[in-house]
Image 1 (tube, one colour):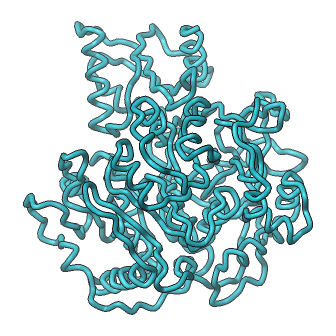
Image 2 (cartoon, rainbow, N blue to C red; image 1 turned 135 degrees about the vertical axis):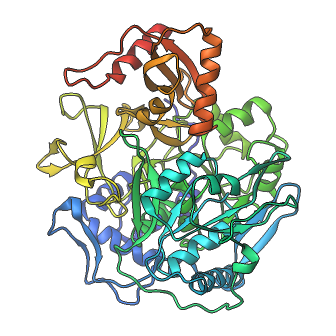
Image 3 (cartoon, rainbow, N blue to C red; image 1 turned 180 degrees about the vertical axis):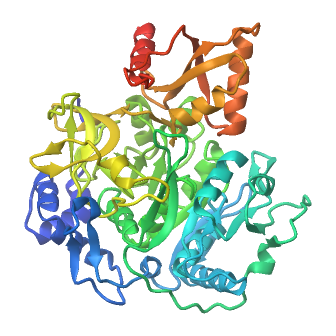
Length: 606
């Protein structure tokens, strides 16, 4: 495989990685990565100093593993609030730019953002909340959403993040798990000249007291206890940060496992350090860079965007519309975005429509791609939209706080491949016999800052460590991805090995999908699988089912299936094919063998 992009001497020497290599007189990137994992305490201590993380009381030990690597304690005995690390630029520095559809670009300075954050934090106290109370956010990625997110953490109130695309059922599940005291939402979502009701979905989910942002002239009826944003926002612009322990919870995100209920994953004050570290080294974010990644706080890339940008003193760029058309392209141009994050589905649309070719994206220094297995042809096309800039492939997880395999701007860039394991972290690939192999399942070697060590609604050890093999005497942590290491040492994604699938960047378990499909009259039982397209791109959702006698046509069955999934789970989940089968393959313990079904389907296409 030939590199599609090679870094110049100037790009290498201006990079954050190179500057840290110079400190340690390391000339080769491969040796720098090895140094970062063989000297973890020193690497993370120097990275934290480089990021300027402020402490009210500094840690006595950066890493303690007396309770086992699976229960690693980072920043032992420190006192801090990670939000303080997000406000270290100059007061007049532009830290957030945004644009509503068909409106002009707006700029927000650090002082303006901090003022809004303090008003929200005071508003929370004034409506009766106290430290430790949970707050839910079900909003699109807006200035207000970012400010609410930071304000809750600053006030010592953990944030529960819920994607605005979720159905009432999915919202209600997350609310039941976390029991927030209040939820922030808005009346409608504005999508392509349509108004989609968001507050109504929140009401249908039996949500607690809601604070509602008004975005439309269309009237809505608030419940008795609910209030509008303007009535909530405090005039008090001064708020003293609540200082906490490093392992206090700051936010709860959700990621599907192999049971019907999503895993509730707490992030602590240490997790954003992983976000900021990855952004600093791998996406090479510098002070006053402009970082755009269309996302939502309900997915880990939402909080990642906030922390990776602000802790690195960069600007967060938010576009309020759908990132598919020319308006978004103009926003990237006019906001002078320097790092643009994508999911491959976006690029596929841009390539087929050619809608972005009219814009000057030369300010972009690199792209980054996550959420799906990408297609080399599309990634090479993306590079050319910014006059030949690299794509930092980035793969990780909510329970990691960032990536475990990625790329850099100091190595040759080959489309749709990862050039390195993430700095400060290490993993091995094991085959079905638990032997080291160039192709296999990813097992992470703990400890790494950012790795979760608890779940709210599940036994953390059982999910990630129970019955995992060891490697050279070290405990390994299960992750569920499959990779192949190429002859040149780079890596390529191979999808998931467990029953969790990734649909359009959203993780969901097979069981969750099957629970919905099994309610259909014509279905006796079902098994959902994700299949990687031959040429890369978003995973295809394929459903095998055993039939109950029915007079419905195949088209009617597929229509009902799609409608059910859209209504009860997520309209973004698209069923590609419905396959009738006489009996589902099972193990001796009666578990459905989805891997067999996946192999059967792939073989049928060849």
